[in-house]
Length: 112
Length: 116
Image (cartoon, rainbow over all chains, first blue to last red; front, top):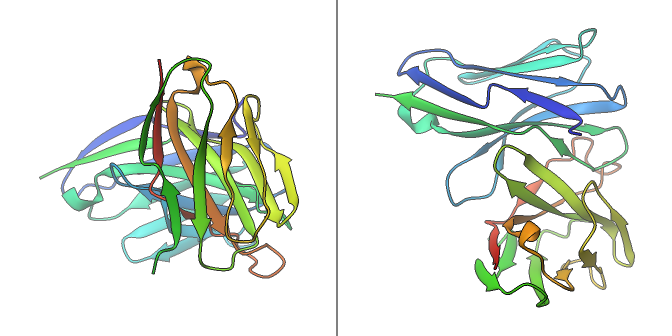
């Protein structure tokens, strides 16, 4: 039973579109919410992360929205590019603990 | 800049065989962990270690053993491989949360294991 639920499983958008990936969690001990990006044949790499004391964080074209009361967070990719085609994982870890629990992943395809 | 190094990259085993997946990091990270990645399941934590001599179980520890004799190395052992252990295995490391309050994980490139 995954502690972090992620949707959708796959997503196809046109270049310039704004894909949105959603995650939900139950464990209120989680206090760090990263998103990882994985290209085929590679390990995941940190893309952007947020703490629960803010509702939004933006880095370049990537934005995390966080709703603490609903225990949900999402990733938005502005002006998506074919190079953004990858698998994206949301994750969460508790305070004072390194154990990271991951969502099931979303395979994003950005068509030219 | 080696980062996290995993060997082998590919391995085929027969049911019942044993093997060890190697993981080494050169970033002086206290925390190391093993994940398995399966389609539709994401990354699931197998075992982790917060420092040399200390290991603990994650979500899916059955069938796997680990040890942490040095800060740099964290091998994962399959004692009697089963087809259900066919997967891609990732080693990851990070500074402890007490030192870096974000817990960013650095991953190796993975080891693809097939058990026949």
